[in-house]
Length: 310
Image: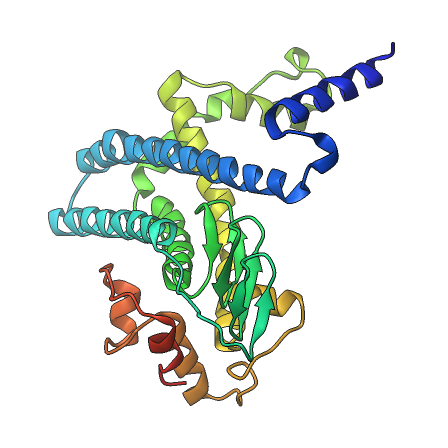
């Protein structure tokens, strides 16, 4: 028996034992399992990355910056700004992950969802992974373990927004630390050519990344390359969502070329501002307060959300 047949029988055995009869197997059941464990794995990665960043900031960056501090008020300002962005990032991630979706009770005149066995109102889509209908569904995000929709869309966007700010401030507010760290690594770049196999430039990059001065240096490198990568990725995400929100759309509507009554309104300053207020669930609060003050806001029902000024 060749290896391919043996592998196929092994996979068949696992699926049959864990999910029942393979012939009656629903592929969406596997999607639910992937979505469930994907959300848990992403949560573990987020907590591990948060621990690494916390250690580098409070045990390496802050002591180094304090040792060369010439202005105490400026140092205190940087610490407060670090803590503010840090708290806002964790707060909005937790809210985006924990908030329940807005319920949209449909009417008999609306479409019927055969999966939920219930009516679903306009601008509502069924998520196969969550197995429920989501009002103004954007997409199913494994990083928060559920769908992005009218229930948590504002916190999801603010999580991306503060991740963009935080990854930039991670380098801008600690110039002394990063300059000293780069200087100590210059000797790792000075490798004699006779000790390297060609191409020489690849070896310099290899030694810069993989050679380190212990576990702490490896942790710093992890945070450095993680934040550089995330910073440029977040520019794309925040830019795309800024355009989508201003247009009154969601990611799903944009991908499948769908529109609704909100997105068909004229594109002007008054409409764009109203769309942002509705998307961010401002209610009676000013828009700037929702952006820069991480506080819990009153959960709304479908009727409250529908009646917001557009």
